[in-house]
Image (cartoon, rainbow, N blue to C red):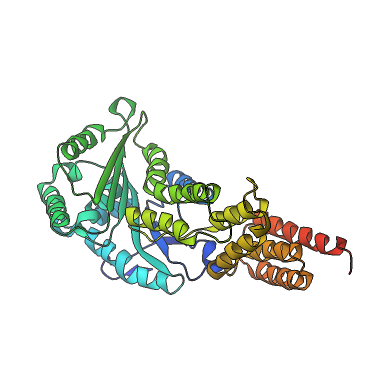
Length: 382
């Protein structure tokens, strides 16, 4: 798309999360992946995000790949004060472009920038320059304030002083480099940045982490992104595992302790600065925990508890067929085959309507539906 301020076209690649068609009411963070033109690192990082999302180590997100053609890469990553176009580019991405995305998918007020080398410096600059709009930065092989640029250091220091005076949502700054002996010339500059940050006290809502890898400049982003993403979004995984502890230690057996579950996610949301919701893994796992009653605690209440969890799951993920087929099994076990058949019909409708579900997941969902159908056909007619 043509951006007047750049006087050039911006080539973008957009990925909407599959979960968006299952839970359209949920808001999704936006991850900007810079350097789309570097296909090896770019594809690797996309696969890393897919891997972490699949296993619940990070929430589903809208991904935006941003290409930086070689002839304009330096100009687009230098701020206006250095006669560059960085401010123009960032203003467009965080303003008009995000507004366009919002028409396609509900967005959370959360932006994560991931860059390497020059675009790592761009991402690092954006954190203080666009205060309140950038929540997290992952900058592989960046530098010490764009190689000792005093104005950028002052910008960062002003940003920190403002955060001290006006505490707010947490911000995260991850940066890294390879080692000089292995081929990363940014080693000494990143070490200087690490020493600078280590010698200062920051407000509680600013978090930073430096990674050093025994690798070259070109492979640093592949080794940085996964570690940083896993650390950044770890509160969400902790909330899920806290939920398992709540289930396994539940005292009351006649109701679901929703407040305890929601408090775990609320705590995670506050620490991350992003509203987190129980996901498919939560509802599937907690429902299965009640249904199978592994510790023989819930006994005659287990079907009621399972149904309560599934109903709540359907409220959020109304397009996910698995909750309907599982609820059908619960209704059948409760002696209501008519309800079970109606729910299976709903499951088939949702599955047929799903456009972006993976082939593997679709196969699993069809198998689940057929399994309940078999149970219904094997039940004696009274």
